[in-house]
Length: 102
Image (spheres, rainbow, N blue to C red):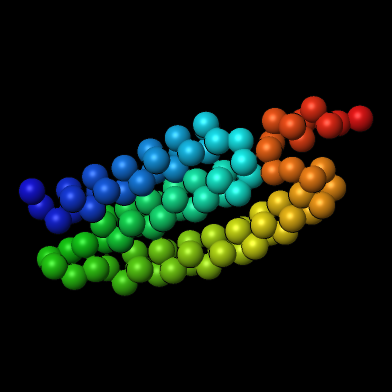
């Protein structure tokens, strides 16, 4: 099996695990972790597609680095929203928060 196939299979596995976590979990922190697992799988796929002749294409590395930086900002905002939701509702369960509406 080639290196590209191994990385691609790992990336697809990470994306599937992240989507499963997002779809089945109700805890907001677990949903954020699922989103991060998906972005990790996407970044790995960027790197895997950039492998050419035993080295990694610099453009693929730049895409992955930019994606990591944007992901860090998204997680910071998401965690701030989670802290605010916890202070307001006293729980991190998303199904209970929807029941607490006016």
